[in-house]
Image (cartoon, rainbow, N blue to C red; front, side):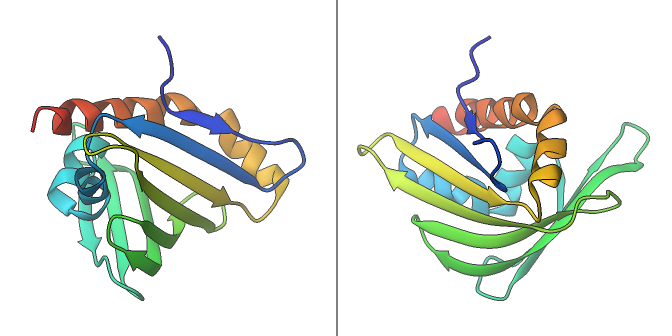
Length: 154
């Protein structure tokens, strides 16, 4: 299966770049990242807090079939410009990974297509490399594929 969401990690750097083009207008792509109901659907997670404004915060958690929390993450929004960018922190709870800094950029390609570029900066190259060893690429591709399927029919 082709991975449509691309991850670029240059050796020796503390960052990765995630890019994906969607057959969605940029307005809809931005909503998928900022509206709790949409985010829950394509990410397969429960949003417990979503304040998409400067100095706002967010938190989400993923539950197993028994209702136990198996993954949770949180962060703070530093800057948000509708349909253009989100600057935020991201921290996976109950893991050895320190907080990450993320720059999400939304780009209109045509009236019906758009692109997201996410630059994630890690505390160290080692933490970045550890994160890349996880099934991260497959997970973000699965989520982005769900996003396209869910919103592509609107």
